[in-house]
Length: 333
Image 1 (tube, rainbow, N blue to C red):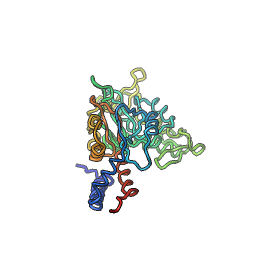
Image 2: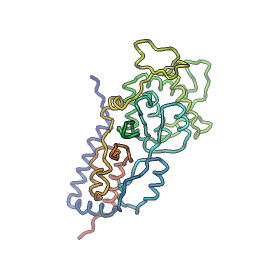
Image 3: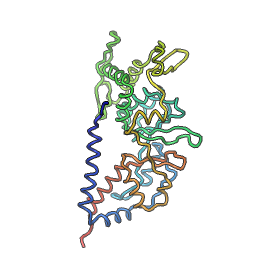
Image 4: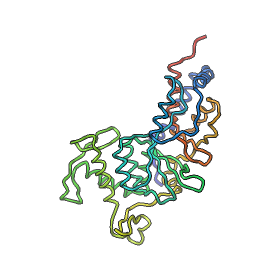
C-alpha cells in the first residue's frame, strides 16, 4: 500500500497545537481578561441574509467595516460562481479580472462536471484568480445549492492526479507546448514560448505580460490531449465520456457526483459545517469559540436546508486575536 506523506500538512498539524499551548502557558493568567476584552470590543453581529457573490461581498466588507484593531467575526471568503464545466465558460471567466477566495462548483444531479475540467480548473483558477479552495454543492428536493463540502485547490489537483494519472500526463505535455512554443505531436507547429509572470504560476507571452492568451492556449492544448473522435475500446468506456453524439467527441474523464467527490478527495475533503441558527443571537464569545474550535482553514455556515450562507476565514480570526494581544496588553494593576 502506498503511503502519501504530506510534510506541510504534518507540520501544520504539529505546530498549530504547539503554538496554541505556548500561547495559553504564556498568557494563562491574563487569558480571562483578554477574552473578556476581545468579546466586549465586538459590535453586534448579524449573519443572516448575507450574499456570497463576489461583488456583494466587497460591498458587505465596506459597509460593515469596523474600528481598526477590533476583532471581527464577519470576515468571510468571497466567491466566484462557476456554472458548468464547458471550455467556453472557462475561457470567458479567465478573461474576467475578478479574484476571490473560493470557487463554487454545483454538481447538480451528477452530470454537470467532468473530472478533467475540475482538474484543469484546480490549476488555472489559483494562477489566474487567486482561488484557495473549491466549494461543492448538489441539488435535491429541498435545496438547489445544498452544501457538500470544500477542498483545498492544491490538494484537489494532486488527488485528481492520483485517481486519473493521464490528466497529469496530458497537462505536462500541454504545459511544455506553451512554454517552448513547440509541439512534438505537430512538427509544423511554431508558437511563441511563454514565461511565468507571477508567484502563483500564471504564464503569459513576453509581448504582453498581462494578456491571458497563454493560459487559454494551455487550456486548449490540454483538452486536445484528452479528447478523441474514435470510440474507446469496450473495456475502456467507463473512463471516457461522449461529449457530442453528432461529432462523436470523447473525453478521457468521468462525471463527478457528490459521492465520488468525497471518495476521490478523502481526508482532504471537509464536509462539516455550522448552522446559522447556532450563530444567530448568540453572545460574541460563544461565536468566537464556535469558529475557533473548528480545525480547518474555512468554516462553512449553512441554513436549515444545508444551503451555504458563507465561509468564514478562520485564520483571520486567529490573526486578529493574536494582534489584539500585541496591540492591547493588559494594564498593570
